[in-house]
Image 1 (tube, helix red, strand yellow):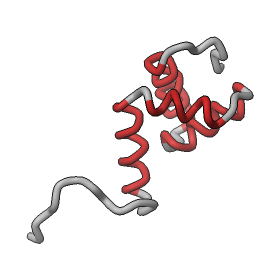
Image 2 (tube, helix red, strand yellow; image 1 turned 135 degrees about the vertical axis):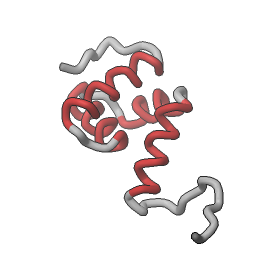
Image 3 (tube, one colour; image 1 turned 120 degrees about the horizontal axis):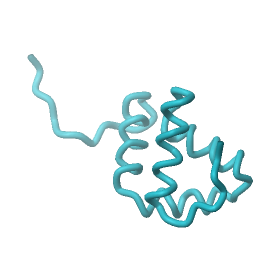
Image 4 (spheres, one colour; image 1 turned 120 degrees about the vertical axis):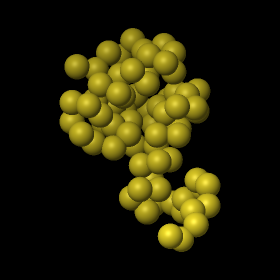
Amino acid sequence: MIDIAIKTPSQFVAEIEIIVKETSMSYFDACMYYAHQANVEIETVASLIKGSQILKAKIQADAERLHMIKGTSAAKLPI
C-alpha cells in the first residue's frame, strides 16, 4: 500500500490523501501511520509536511476541528 520511494512533498501528499480516503483517519494520523508503515523517521515525515502548504493547512484544520489548537481562521461574528 505504501510506496517507500517517495521523493517529493507532492508525492507524499498524494500518498497521505490515499490513506485518508481509504481509512477515514485524520491527516495527522495518516502521517503517523505512514511513518510507521514505511519505517521512516518522524523527522523525515515532518520535512515532507513542511514542503506542502496544502497538507499543513489540512493538518491545521483537523487540529482546530478536534480542539487541539485554537482556531486561527477569520473571526466569526455571532448570529
